[in-house]
Image (cartoon, rainbow, N blue to C red; front, side, top):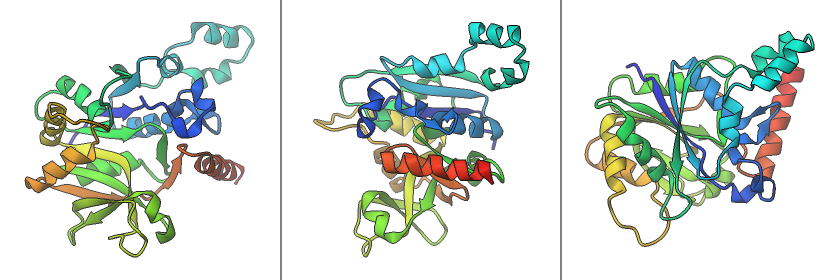
Length: 273
């Protein structure tokens, strides 16, 4: 199955990383010398994605600046004999689209995807990704593996295995014997968790699930956010197949200071090695 479009959700405020996220968009926090979102963008390109839809906040400017051509910097490098650095600032070979998610109202991950749904041609599947983490692999594209898992039709989701004592901090994936998604258990105790695999918000949505997500936004919720897990649950209960794909690479997350420091240390050690 050929999938050429991806949605990357980058509209969050990053409140767990305040005060730095007061001025730096969460997805632009650095892993080494690159923003975290760029690792996901590069993996998308490696997987054959040609169109990326960034769902951004109303005040977002930094991600647009990063992925546009910087004429002044390019001219400076060329004038000063630093042409060897030009590949580092060249925009990736992919088409970017920016969809704004309003600051007010019931937002959430389902709302982000639902805003992109009308732009996707009938029958197409899409990749859905968070923008403040990535799965780093030196042996191939993790997103390509996710797409391959959905190649027989249906959808797919990626999970990462963690130590059981960490499970109460995450949504834990329950899968059946065939490796298909059953449900997510939110922050279960280590003893009650159905597996050691957590949800990391990396999916393939077939067209049916994409439209279910769009329709979910027509329902009324009195508080909270439109969470992406709700249309996924409806999809599966209606007979939809969602394959669970264990990540093979290293999961790197910028959501907390502890995880961000770990990610940078891990990458630094790889670069030194």
